[in-house]
Image (cartoon, rainbow, N blue to C red; front, side):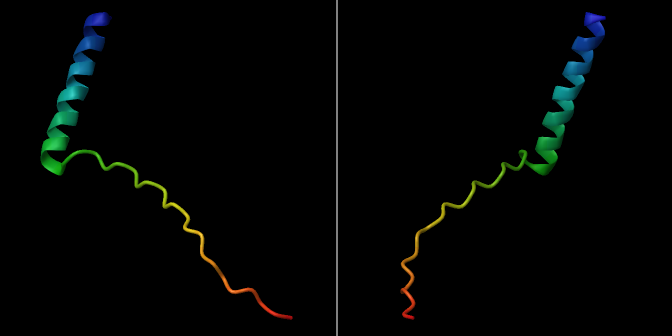
Length: 45
């Protein structure tokens, strides 16, 4: 059973390499934007 698992792992690795070669590397998630504090004028009542 270990032999079959090793073959499956190798096939997955080869498939990933082929896909990366054709489409480029996996897209990384975009970093979350950093909130920038804004000085808002205070409202007069």
